[in-house]
Structures are given as C-alpha cells and as structure tokens.
Amino acid sequence: EVQLVESGGGLIQPGGSLRLSCAASGFTVSSNYMSWVRQAPGKGLEWVSVIYSGGTIYYADSVKGRFTISRDNSKNTLYLQMNSLRAEDTAVYYCARGNGLGATPFDNWGQGTLVTVSS
Amino acid sequence: QSVLTQPPSVSGAPGQRVTISCTGSSSNIGAGYDVHWYQQLPGTAPKLLIYGNSNRPSGVPDRFSGSKSGTSASLAITGLQAEDEADYYCQSYDSSLSAVVFGGGTELTVL
Image (tube, rainbow over all chains, first blue to last red; front, side, top):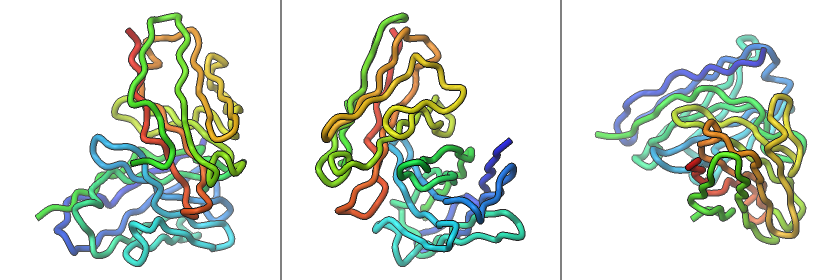
C-alpha cells in the first residue's frame, strides 16, 4: 500500500527556516516524480515544487530561491527546505506522488503538515 | 485569481446530476495539456478523482466522469449522494507559466 507521511511543520517567525519531511512507503521515491503542493487556510491548492526521478527540479515562482526540494534515497524520503519564510507561506503542505502532467497526476497524497509563519 | 476558472459553488439534491466547469486558455487546457480532477473531503487531503481528462482511478465510482473540449473541461457527478459533499479542483499545466496550475476549487453542497 502506498503511503506518504509528512512531518516538520510548526510555528515559525518570519524570516525563519523549516525543513519538511515526507516519508514514503509502498513505492520508491527515487523512481517517481515527487511534488509538494500547499493550501493556505481556507484557500485552494497551489503547486510548490517537483523533483523528477532523474533529478530535474522545478519550483513555483512564489518560492524560487527560497525553497529547496530534495530526497534521500536511502530513507525513501522527500524533503522541502524552506528559508526566508513569509506570512504568505502559511499553509498546509502536502507531498504527493506525480508531477501533475499527462499520465502522472498527483495520484497519492500525504495527510499534510501545517506551517504557520507568524511573529 | 486562478489560471483555471471554476464556479465557487454548485449544489444539487440527492440523486441529481451536477457538473463543474473548469475554464482555461490556449496556454493550458487549449494547448492540449491533460486535465485532472481532485476531490477534497472536509478536513482531509485531496484525492485523485479523474486523470487524463476522463479516466477514473481504480475505486472511483462510475458516477464521476470527466470531459474536455477546447479550452475547457468538465466534471459530472450523477446520482448525487450526501458523501459527495466536498471541494473539487481541476488541475493542468500552463506553458506560459511553466507551472502546474489548479482551479480555485468548487464547493459541492448536497441539498
């Protein structure tokens, strides 16, 4: 059974850093497209970043230069390093398998982890 | 403002049919990029409902169907049930933005 479990969220001050983790089971992270999608309180879904199986990485303009996606193949875990956090980064962050294109939609999602950026 | 436009809300009585539209442009849906639909029940993570415009993942009832034409896509739900009350999101790719894009979401209320 495919399972994704996020962790690492919490309350952080503006300008701070946080690293989110997404532990996967039932499949191999490094063999799949893996993405982060966020949802601000009461708002819709926003794509954040993707890492391809070959290592190619893309970011939404809103986080480019501040967030870094990575993976640890030995731990079968996906990460999102978030620096220079802003109030508008407050959201539930979901990891998902897939890249949202064609035959690889976001077919499995974690339960999400809440990041609150506030002083 | 979302790149893909959905109605904020739709409603229907049990057993009825409802449709949710997703309007894009020539740089996303109209450019031939697939549309996927996700269902988000209250307080839970999104779940893939329709992929590749009209395909249902295993386990999704055939009451749910998707279609795409031109720069728009639609999700249809027949035989509406109380358990269908949720937010529904369409999703595609935009070549001008070089980014995955979502619709703003549609809240379905079963009367």
